[in-house]
Image (cartoon, rainbow, N blue to C red; front, side):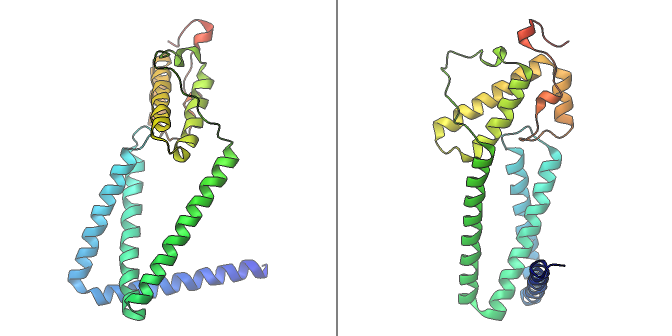
Length: 216
């Protein structure tokens, strides 16, 4: 095993062990009433996570909402226990510095991943369409509509202008409406298979307006 990989695994094991100890200390220091408060906070956070997942840009998915709920709840419990343990062991000032450092690192990582993801995907800016051009989706083939969905999914997280975001959301909805019109059964299969923002609905939908007919 390479020395670098061994050091990385050893550091990760020590980090997990330290976190477990701090969480245990935090749980003991909180007492029964404090643990009840932690559980309630986790339930509230889980509900918020599920709500955000359901209100996302993609079609609603029950499994995605459940996954978001328990992930959010678990992170909430771990974070609260770690904070409590850190305050007991190191004091409030040191804990505050640690939290600030972790948040700064997470923000920097998120920003870096966003930039890399944009470059890797080669996301092109979406050109606005005139409001009167409501039939653009009917002029596209099914594969083109699927690519529009996938491409706009990649563009949406890095589009900050409100007008541009609204245009993207509108195009996405019109593309989905047209795909469902072409082949309702195939579109329903895409939803049933756990449709996500990065899955191509064109793999399930048939029918091409360029051929002059829709799918039965």
